[in-house]
Image (tube, rainbow, N blue to C red; front, side, top):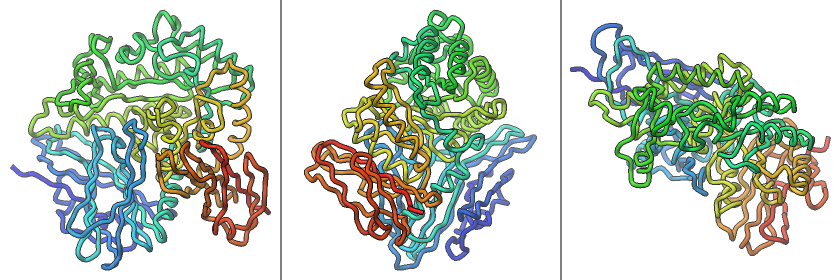
Length: 616
């Protein structure tokens, strides 16, 4: 019995990086792996190359047994005496420290290994890595919306060996079956590590976001209905009236957001009942969509097609489409106790049903935004009853099915914007990001006892990698509103409270003028921190516009009322107008601002926002 271990060398793919920087490791040639095809894309303006692996089984006879599949195995050369650091970030896990940036020195002979948790790509660890020296480095990203594993090992020569790919594989394919494996994106850069991060942000904005709308049209400014109505208490009558009430306020909001709970049985026990609750929504969501269209706002509605609960329509009618969990650790045992089930998108019949039912609802309800949530840990479902020669195959088929499902929705509804929630930011790999935006980056938000430190820190952390994200607010004090600023914002407030509406109106008038700046370069001005005795601050800057924004937050127990910040990316001799939203305007040169600028906040906690504009 012949088996194949798949190791792909970066050099074999004509990378847009220096041949002196990447060396080929000893590994099997891809020509020795039956049915392997590699597709690559080069992004010369960004110094980046992407490749994707596909396996095709023979049309007849037994498939080879594939083991230890890796999508990358290559070495990056650094000077022998260079200190090499790995910059990476925590992923989302519904914790205040979600997206915390981390830095680890690489030590010769000691591999540094990272992996996802539970079957979602950015659960626990983000699938993005910056291998950096003082003079430059290489960013490596994994495009796979399931489980992955990556290792970085400094060699005695000074080079770093990088391996990345699927976490578990030992399988055969069905005759004629074709599957895709994880994609790899590499980008070389010169300069400091933060220069590499910003080059990568530009790459993601250009090639890692949906293309059917410009960035600021993709990202909405939402009126959330759940600041008034809990999930399971919405109805056609309530939502139609609220849409008219919000429109009458003439706030600059462009999206009406209905989240979970509208389907029969409510949230979460009704997942697996795809239809709207017949009592609360006797005509489905169509009347709500029609009412929203009359206001000029766009309509966003929530779905969770991959999950079903015990006793729902899907379990009764199609138990053969569903997977059950086993072997869950104690903290996740509720998935087994409460009857969580996974719709197997690797099953063609199940996937086609999902495509047809969701597509019909999109058309019937006139949706502009489709939000897909995913509130379970799929690895424990994929692993159930795995056969010895099918390890990893159920996951591969499910993720292939997920891409086929999303791509078909996009094909049928070209203007539709797909929003990827996944229990708050747990599917943020670049394959998902090029298909979907992310409007809900973590389930640790307004209600957490660490608020607002948690959401401030998340903007600091996630902005190292992604240009399009934000939060918004559920309250209308300055601290809450300014803590949630970003490329998008959802406002789940009481729209029938005149005082709250007035505060939101004042905030939106300022925020919308600077919102495009959040797509620019990002600079952390303080360390990432949740500490209530600290300050936290950052800067976004659009060199093409000559405009920037600085946000600084004094935490509730910070002793000092003053913070000195050294700004970045400015032209030294250029004169800039600085507007403090609370304290007037002044003029400084870029050189002065990069040398140091003082912010004073007498109260605590408090937030400062500075707007920078180059004077022409």
